[in-house]
Image (tube, rainbow, N blue to C red):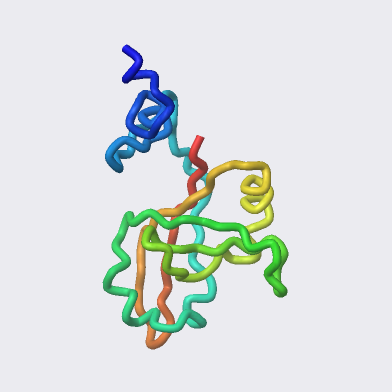
Amino acid sequence: MSDIIKSNENGIVGLLHSKVNGLSVPKPFERDIYLFDSHVAGTSFIEGIEELEPYLKIDDRLDFFREPDNKYDTQAIVIKNTDGVKIGYVPKEDNVIFSRLMDAGKLIFGRITNKEMKRKWLKIDIRIFLSE
């Protein structure tokens, strides 16, 4: 019995924190709430975006990270793919509410809904979600 309640990552605590053998175990009542459609801003400033484009697939998850020290926008939200590669930002006109939610500890993320290479500009449409 004591093996189950150990506080290491292989016991029940690890299971509850989704750390058992790298498996992702959903938490009870966890759900993703659709909030908004938007796009990824600033892709033309990302070095190597043309090489990255083939690896970005429709419905891929995109992780959002606050960047409060951004000199152009204190409410900036960086968008990265699941490998941690920066692909751009949530547009400035869309980030006010999302940055406040993130600052309050909420998990916001995106999913790619469409992408199109236009010369050196990669247009990526996204759907933004709140994980609750």
